[in-house]
Length: 214
Ligand SMILES: [Zn+2]
Ligand SMILES: [Zn+2]
Image 1 (cartoon, rainbow, N blue to C red):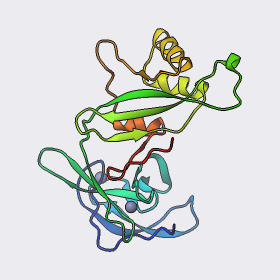
Image 2 (cartoon, rainbow, N blue to C red; image 1 turned 30 degrees about the vertical axis):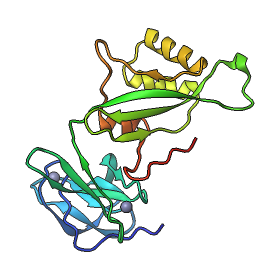
Image 3 (cartoon, helix red, strand yellow; image 1 turned 90 degrees about the horizontal axis):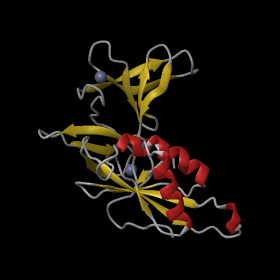
Image 4 (tube, rainbow, N blue to C red; image 1 turned 180 degrees about the horizontal axis):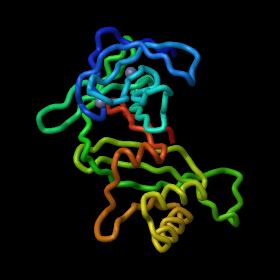
């Protein structure tokens, strides 16, 4: 799909939540000038560029602290359009002719399940279960899903969710038995943040017409 930004959008800075304005940039690490929305706050380096999301632009374009929220309809970047008085953020797709928007509660926590996936041609003796992470928003029921991954990748992800070795052994044996496992925290079901889900490679499923490849 060709990246084509809507005209007349009004993104807010994802850090300051203040207004942004179209500005022309030239950065020394890329050989062209380009137009992006720049935060109007003093000394804020934040810019929204459709297709890249939120990035810091000084002399260099830095995506290190970048943030992108992908539209589940077309995988284009979304911008922060509005924050209502109770803190709920409204994000809209920046792509021309896409009307997708979603309400995001920045304090939302997610419960995480690990579902076993049967892989053909795998020797049972390998004992390396394939699985897929699935997360559900505790208050809004939003569903996120990750790719099918081998155990060594899953292991790293689960460690990033602070699962200890006893919990990891438990998850692995559930998967080997073909049953899903739920991530738990010390005292209660674990609640992970949306940022953690994004880092772990999960993608939000579109709200309407949910279809999971099985
Ligand atoms: Zn800013
Ligand atoms: Zn879209």
